[in-house]
Picture 1: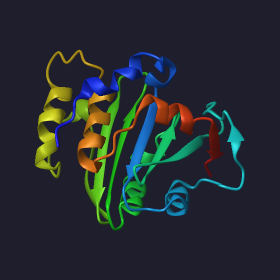
Picture 2: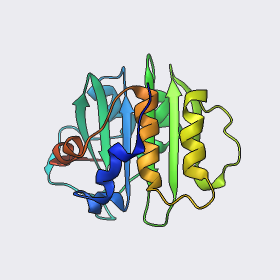
Picture 3: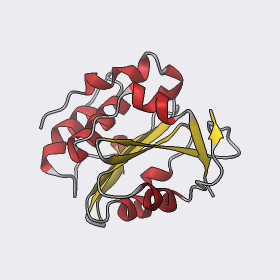
Picture 4: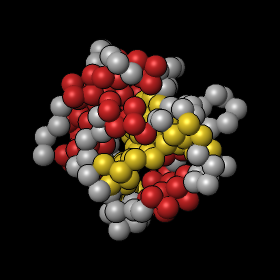
Length: 181
């Protein structure tokens, strides 16, 4: 499978507010309950149109193609090593995180084992990164890279999990947020 970071150009378009900071995590084999537990989400307290406000963090959940997708618009719990490991049990999980300061991270785990989780700007090697993701990582870390690096990180999530996250998915997910403990 080959993916195109340009498919994630919506980060700079209709969801520009989301493009400044966010985290998208995909887990291919976990249930919604297991993913919510790993994130520390309280599924009994949904909040319409909840977005991170700097005080209370929220996560939004959506199923796409049989996989669980978690969207955080002001958080990065999905890019935590322990969360990636937990939600990858029996399958694959990957996470893309970016913020307004230009920090972009990609992480992935398979069958309960962390493979890779690092910030692009700190790398000159890719230990543990699956070989089919290296060209995208090199593109993101390349000198003078002008592309939206978060779009490349989301393309890497798709390449690793086989799940494409669309602007419509994110908009749908963010209609309801769940507070994180």
